[in-house]
Length: 88
Image (cartoon, helix red, strand yellow):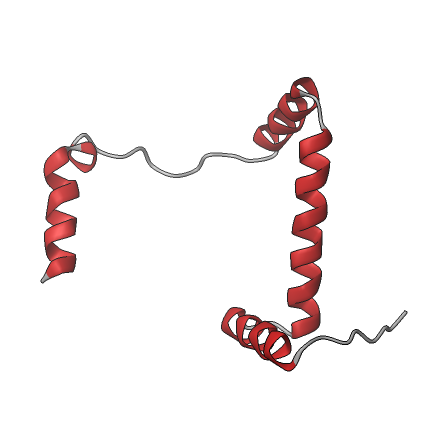
């Protein structure tokens, strides 16, 4: 059911810019914002047991197919090398 909302021009321009930056329509952007807000409210109302159950279900539906990182990739030196490269 289509609806019309009256919002200030600056707000409409901001929403349009953010939607464009994400490469989606304003309608899709607003829906994603609302769905995120509803999901946050639902998560806040769940008990720790319910959240743990949802987390376990999420884990069971995802697989790890990536190769493990090498020992070198986890060293302090590699972290600082990457930072130095970005600064150059």
